[in-house]
Image 1: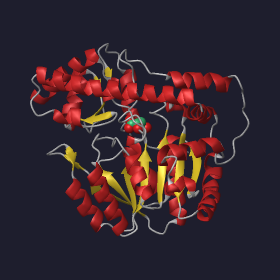
Image 2: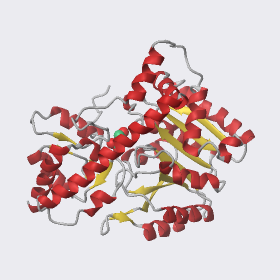
Image 3: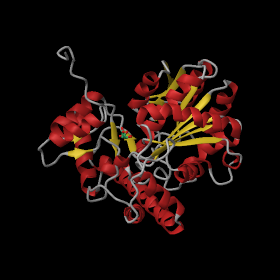
Image 4: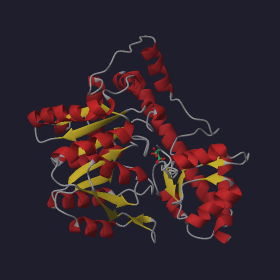
Length: 399
Ligand code: LMR
């Protein structure tokens, strides 16, 4: 019955992790998937999360959650993104539901849009996180278009190109934006550039859909990393927001996230929520409770919240330290080219500028596992591996 089934291609990101696991070389270095590692190369369970987890475990509850998840989780997530004083929160304009991390939130949002939003065009930055290209059409938003985002010559934002492409796009398109720490490039618009993007979004009546996977993790400051979301919300834009707690709480495998639809008023938001339930119920019925219960404790308890903020800053600082170190090591190794983008980019990743053959060479000869687009997870580096990687890069460029 299934003999016609062809072998599927490996996932561009998670496939790298599989290849890394298979390698038996002791020097192997995993810079593929975006997952934080300590200086010792170990996964990190945050202390705030550990304490919250103990409280959750000591009071077991394995009942079903409502279709929309833990109500406090939804309220706290929306407040975290929009801020306590946001009119979105004060006027209850948000329909917020718990979903399966960033991916699941994007998918629920896209399915809702396919059913209830008349424009089936989504504008994605080029490049973007590969799953964006799959999620929207699979959900029924079939017309996927790219807008210029990264400029290879400057290794920065192609702001002019971006605005030009947005101006040419169909009115009312869904505009996918990375809230901060753009994945894979690590290049974010400046404050002024965000204002310019907002102006075009208003002119063209776009529906912004923010993907927020790194709040607090990018700069170490929860408010700063929410600047773009808040700027758009304060302008009274209706929008969607997918939030993930994978990186900022280190809850990768717990699949904790939230989808928010911001509507014009509370009555519309209530109706939107009823429709989100109709998307969720036949998809995964109701979300898992463990990870979300941990998030509630961390966000609700002032002591845990303060500790979390401190730990977030610690992770962001270590990554920034690796940026500086890698930059210095590349210079020490005499790697041809200009490397200032390594320290200028932000968040979990650096877009090195290495070509696909160079990446393939690095993997084959130096056992460095990274995505073929030249992205490296800065969080996977430590003092020792920075030097090793820099030498490998220098060799790959000269080869
Ligand atoms: C990444 O880009 O490496 C992460 O967001 C993990 C993933 O799911 O792709």
